[in-house]
Image (cartoon, rainbow, N blue to C red; front, side, top):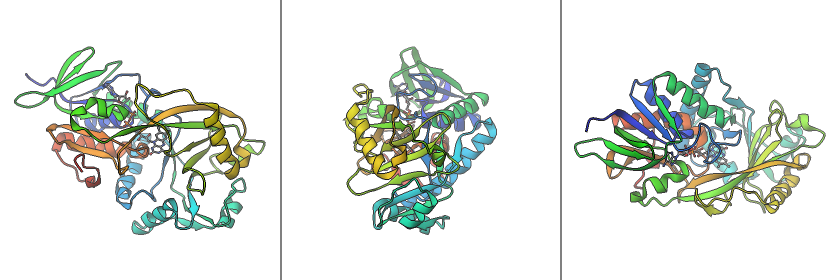
Length: 376
Ligand SMILES: Cc1cc2nc3c(=O)[nH]c(=O)nc-3n(C[C@H](O)[C@H](O)[C@H](O)COP(=O)(O)OP(=O)(O)OC[C@H]3O[C@@H](n4cnc5c(N)ncnc54)[C@H](O)[C@@H]3O)c2cc1C
């Protein structure tokens, strides 16, 4: 059967929208299929803000990808005229020797990234609303900040369509198989399409879309909360207050953002949520969950621990080592996989889109993605 499209992209969330844009920019005939609506709130790419930073505590191997991700986000901003990123500076905080602090300092050192080392006294002077313990320190990175995830997804979709991509929403992929002689047949609830290549960006649904791989993925429910700051709310404005990631004794790692206009101060635990599935996830947030977050916030930012304005659930798709899954499908070189972003993928969407376009069109990429081999 003649292929109708050069490439089909399955899933148009954070990663799929970026892949669609990069493929369309190369003049490829590409179709994107998404079961829900553009920039929906039922996957992993919603909730107003995502942290972006370069001094990556998780592993210095991510830094070259981050440098390229920043360039590509800036290029997308210029092209679409949409504000996508806000540099607020970022504090990576914890006791000396903690993974967040030491890992960030190591990445900064190894890659010559601009950063400062702050003591508890420095932190209190710079951000009087913060309450560091006397033995806590922080790596401060001026280039860190946040992305607006819904705007990022919409900007990639807009650029893709402007370059000739087709995007179908409310279209669920129900299966796919290799076509003898080359290419892939993709079945949807609205009919079947054929393509030379398939790029799978199914987020928390990856296990369901590619069950043959038996990938060791766990979907984890994690909740974001927005709290109303007390009187001194100017102290939380984005020009005065940074993003932060905190590893403190007696509480799971958590992170937060400045108060964006018209919204409260956003804060969330990183991991420590329930293991679930995209079908079974509890979208309600309990009073106990809000109370646990407020208690953590009260010790760190007491002026922000006011009324909880809203809370919403989101999904991490975790791998055992918390590194991503990016590469060719081990059983079919016409299929490219991107998933398992383990709660830290959004900042990379722009560069992952470029990597996926490389893999789909050339079978390889100049970017360092060895850490993410699907069969590792
Ligand atoms: C609470 C929370 C906080 C986070 N904070 C950060 C952060 O600060 N910084 C950061 O870098 N990362 C962060 N992340 C992680 C980051 O948001 C994710 O890694 C990223 O959004 C994953 O993108 P994705 O494209 O894989 O998934 P999604 O954006 O969920 O996209 C997958 C898409 O595939 C579609 N799909 C699935 N199956 C099918 C099918 N069969 N047919 C058609 N469509 C299908 C889905 O509907 C969905 O739209 C956070 C995540 C959460 C949940």
